[in-house]
Amino acid sequence: MALNPFEMATKQLENAAAKLKLDKGILKVLSQPERALEVSVPVVMDDGRIEVFSGYRVQYSSVRGPCKGGIRYHQDVTIDEVKALAAWMTWKCAVVNIPYGGGKGGIKVDPFKMSEAEIRRMTRRFTVMILPLIGPEKDIPAPDVNTGPATMDWMMDTVSMFKGYCAPGVVTGKSIELGGSLGRKEATGRGVMICTLELLKRLKKEPEKTTVAVQGYGNVGSISATLLAEQGCKIMGVSDVSTGFYNPNGLNIKEINKYVETSKNRLLKGYNAKGAEEITNEQLLTLDVDVLVPAALEGVITEKIARKIKAKIISEGANGPTTPDADKILLENGVIVIPDILANAGGVVCSYFEWVQDLQSFFWDEDEVNRRLENVMSKSFNEVWSFAKEKKVDMRNGAMMLAVQKVATALQKRGIFP
Ligand code: NAD
Image (cartoon, rainbow, N blue to C red; front, side, top):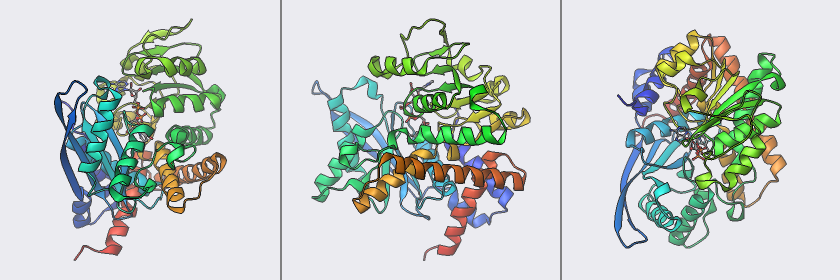
């Protein structure tokens, strides 16, 4: 039976709440999104046909600040997936201590079957359909799977047309020319790299002696692989939806990056290099490496896969890649999981920097962005690591407990309206 991501997110919350002995009423409030909007998005296709797509925007929590979270275009998007992703955004913003709540959005669509003009019309119509919810002070979308700067630019322009003035602060992950932040594109992968190195440091393991496998070669996966390789790690395997590659002597990441720059849909399929053998996604996840970075979709590390995983560190680039049952097995096997809400928080931290820069109309250079990002990520890693040690729990429970505690405290201080 297919996994329901919202049940997975709720289970993680309940585990943390039980360990924190959280008030039952507060848990009830935190177990449901504040608001969930379902919209239908009609689009005139290039051949004149009308198609209608289902879209969603979920505001999970605005207790600590405006809702924040990406927009995903994928054929498997469901309301429960969007709710789960919005919940994880809530905990993620709390764990890295940025003044946001959590939200998420998505359209159930396969964008690879559409032209750019069709995607643009769909994005603009979707933006108008969710217009009552979004705004710099209430809910700020960003890119996620199969969306990027162009999607955010169209959203920003659409909102600006309705407002009658330029409103860059309504979305993050925009093009630099429209108020995007330097370093934003690389920020999630950079955060994965920073967290992985922080853990290696604590385990007294040198990056030069560390082997890595990365699943998903989009924004998060390719940048995590590139930055970890720059730190000296050996990237043994990479994969995406089309295929995977493994080289026992390490892959040439620069060469792979060059290949995907011009390949169809930026996919790995067709890459051909001496020493690189083609592998499946299951083989990738179970490679004999030190670090596994899942950076594709949720629920890929199932109980069955977890039993076969040889990596001793999992750095979760993707949101929700590990099921709760798999988590138990990984824990029994001594695998340290740097949980998604910490490992991939670099993106939202930099989105926060982008929003701050937009609101101030004052922009920082890339070194400043990266320096601030490094500060936040290392500090948050350290906080989760120490908290988990103190409470004698794994890092996932530690991060969740810290996050839930912060949101619950804010909620208790605000009180239940009226
Ligand atoms: P992306 O669209 O740029 O890349 C997704 C990658 O996953 C692609 O390489 C795709 O081919 C691959 N993929 C898709 N289905 C797959 C499958 N069944 N098996 C193997 N590979 C598959 O998306 P992204 O922005 O890199 O996001 C990846 C993950 O990271 C998602 O879980 C997303 O929620 C999470 N995330 C993204 C950001 C961000 O800033 N982009 C921030 C935090 C978390």
